[in-house]
Image (cartoon, rainbow, N blue to C red):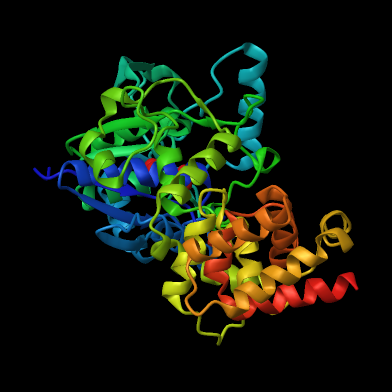
Amino acid sequence: MSDKVRVRFAPSPTGYLHLGGARTALFNWLYAKHNNGACILRIEDTDRTRSTDEYIDEIIKGMNWLGLECDEGPFRQTDRFDTYKSYVERLLNDGKAYHCYCSPEELDKNRKEAMKEGRALKYNGRCRDLKEPVPGVDPVVRFRMPQEGSTVVDDLIRGTVTFENEQLDDLIIQRSDGTPTYNLTVVVDDVDMEITHVIRGDDHLNNTPRQIQLYQALEYEIPRFAHLPMILGSDKARLSKRHGATSVMAYYDMGYLPDAIVNYLVRLGWSYGDQEVFTRDELIKYFSFESVGKAASIFNPEKLLWLNSQYIMNSSPEELADLVIPFLVKDGTVSEEQELDRQWLSRAVHTLQERAKTLVELAASLRYYIAEEIEYDEKARKKFLNTESRELLVELKEGLDAMTEFSEEGIEKLFKDVAEQHEVKLGKVAQPVRVSLTGGTQSPGIFEVIDVMGKEKTVQRLERAIQSIS
Ligand code: GLU
């Protein structure tokens, strides 16, 4: 077996990349990176009726978005049918597998009998020692599972898990149409791809003793296993759409940052003291299976949202400006061809990033900086754009218009002067301006907003507000 750590992420392309799959991919990726190893992407597409190329693309898109690119692959199992066949032949030749001619009706009858007699629901072994083929029947191939003793899974997370062999079925490794089944393809691929650590969801734990038996029959070294606990919804049921979006790319659409998702997913099962927020380098450095718990984790969308807001708060405005553009386009705030001045956009972002929990929110709040026109919130308009504030707005507009150099300090001084002259508090001046410029009553500091908005737009909007009063 390879000296270097080699892991694989092996999704079945029968759906989008969901949070559970992404976490499995992440733990594989982290383990590989931590050990300077390699991560292999293997597409388990043998179920041809449910697998699609579109899902393969979507899974890869999701992984790339999260920054979990693999070092090798994607390999597709449907390209490897000849390889699987040769392994099946080998097991047949060695007497470790056999042809089974039992019809579905017979198997069904056996199952019912076993159920009635309280025996384990498994194949009764009728074809195990058949000497001659049954003419006119396309047989399946079954693996001759040992019937005595036990198989021990030595798991990096679960510890030692023992399975009694008498509970293990003579599993079908090749269907009557010649196609291989999951347990065989996984073992063959893990052997061929020199996988040293199999890291996957613990819904596969029951398959592991069967796979170990196959390794032994093929006389290959058994890899290490790490079965990750499931992710559940708040009601302790397996995570599903009922608990909110589960597709990773849905989080892209909702304006989450990939690093926030990664940070959230890693904490579903893994911990490092009390630390909640990690850089990617820290994750790579600290990751180990010793700190992965056995218990299932509960998906908490509020915590994910909180983490996202932390990442937005701590990202550089330049980086956020790049990320928010597609959302501005989607909103219709800017057109696809429109070139925004990135430096200016970064300044606008900087004023807002502490308040936005998602890029969608950030884009929405950027709207008043960018759009030609704004709409007033009706309540805010009534309350603040009226005859009482008109004179203040006129004076401010004129003052701003006359300013040769536009700066936050200069703007602040003008506001203070106007407030003083009219013997009102600064807030009395600021709120009508805020409504005039942003349409609502909440925004970052008004001097900052004016400074970013620039003289021309500010004066225009004040003028419009004044007009709306008269
Ligand atoms: N293709 C399997 C799945 O998507 C994973 C199998 C494995 O990791 O061994 O559940």
